[in-house]
Amino acid sequence: MNIYLIGMPGSGKTTLGKRLAKTLGFSFTDLDIVLAEQEKMPVTEIFAQKGELYFRQAESECLKKTIQLQRSVIATGGGTPCFFDNMEWMNANGITIFLDVSTEELVKRLTINEDATQKRPLFANKSVQELRSSLETMQTNRLPHYEKSQFRFLPHETKPSFVASQLKERLPELFK
Ligand SMILES: Nc1ncnc2c1ncn2[C@@H]1O[C@H](COP(=O)(O)OP(=O)(O)OP(=O)(O)O)[C@@H](O)[C@H]1O
Ligand SMILES: O=C(O)C1=C[C@@H](O)[C@@H](O)[C@H](O)C1
Ligand SMILES: [Mg+2]
Image 1 (cartoon, rainbow, N blue to C red):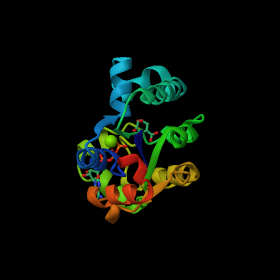
Image 2 (image 1 turned 180 degrees about the vertical axis):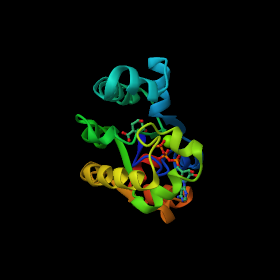
Image 3 (image 1 turned 90 degrees about the vertical axis):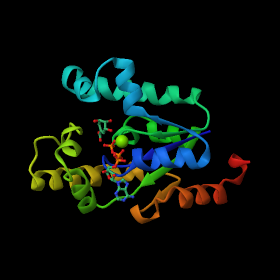
Image 4 (image 1 turned 30 degrees about the vertical axis):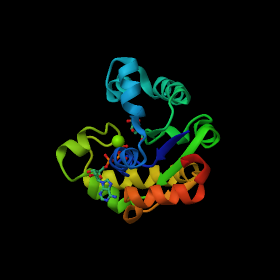
């Protein structure tokens, strides 16, 4: 059984994912990294060279291959739950956790330094106002998908020990 972390870019999937994996004794997998390795180019390049449709199809295939993993905390891409049957598939095959972070908090996190903005292709080269506006639109469109997750945590609730205890309380059979 794998755990899928879901949420907007900057919502903390990688940060929590690595720590939660350690706490639970699971491995950690970053779907964007697996996809980049498979395609032999960074996700920014896949978008730029092959377009979004190609990216989304490859992403979905890559997601489904995670069925082969056991006991892994998987950070999904920000858009993963919003395409094809990905969200339903994750709910049917694993535990889904939505990291629910406000637009204002995302703006802060994504503008904290140049690196934070540039490494996220959907937001590079935007003013703070443009960034806020695209995050707002994106979040509104994506929320109906994210909300299908089985668990939802706000930023102050993402201490790995707390998340682990909530998972064990609701799904004790999985952690025996
Ligand atoms: N609970 C938290 N409270 C405050 N800051 C946080 C929290 N979790 C993560 N951060 C910070 O927010 C930023 C984004 O976190 P992270 O890279 O883990 O997000 P992500 O969801 O993996 O993003 P992406 O989808 O782009 O890979 C980092 O600077 C991280 O230190
Ligand atoms: O929010 C998104 O649509 C994306 C987020 C990243 O994790 C990558 O999966 C890619 O840059 C697309
Ligand atoms: Mg990440």
